[in-house]
Length: 409
Image (cartoon, rainbow, N blue to C red):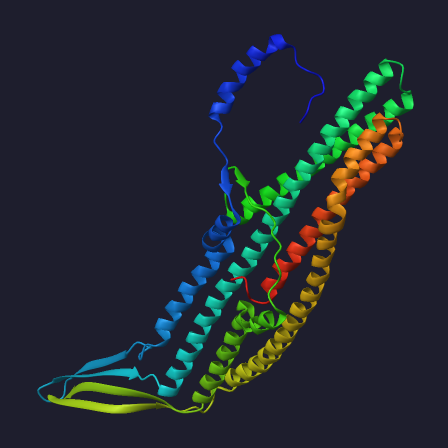
């Protein structure tokens, strides 16, 4: 914040004595580059942490699905005393263990593997979306800081002009109208600067939230717009998009469910062994247990799997088509936005410095009025702000293009 009224010189020593302890207690802000911010997002983002936890859950289920015995053995025992003759104590103990049928085991293992691949793809998708948000927010902060610098410089120029107009007015060489117009221009410049500072602060707070940081941060970097990747390269990378890979893994899950439903149409096999004693004689028994698929033939599992697989196949095809359309569309938009940025860089921006200097000299020489000078300066500021806006638009479009093409991982 700038002050046009100077503090009395006598207060400066006191001010410095009061300020030094406060400054010494402040911690230096953490400086982040784009690469550092992206590294933090890859490892510490809230959505990334949650997705990583789901991978561990899926791995635990996969390990369980690969076990040969899922059901616990069943022990049945009965006994009693027989009073006939000399009397006997009879008993009968049986252990039954269901076997994990090969087709069912293969189906469950395939489903668990597909579920693990889906959660891994979901982790990559969560990371991709978080990186995109961090990338976009970082770019917005950079542009907001450039806007603050531009508007601060403009405010200083307007303040200097206001001081000159006030001196002319006090000398009787200016009019009240000129003085009022200069004051309005200075007030508007301060308002624009404050709004730009608020926008930059808001974006910085948003970046801290995305990264999960509590300490104060500053960012370093610039927006360097190079030529985009070739369209053919971008289209070829669509298949690597994590969201599409997650859908493909869901398709495999549904197909594994179909295999399980088909396996349920066959009898389930188990083994049984037992030991008994009857009238003093020991009896050892062994046998096979068959669970006949009479009432439950896996119809529900099969029907659900088939319906799910059909829907997921269609969703995957639509998503792939939408991704192709999105990449082509954003590539076309980016081409036009880059052309607009280059036009401003090569044609408009080089002339602004000359126009600002010439306008100031012409006003001092009395060749143009104050209103014309303010109008020229406003055009200069608006053109520079428009350049920053076009640069940001092109940068964001490029981010979205590379995200849609699966380049950002």
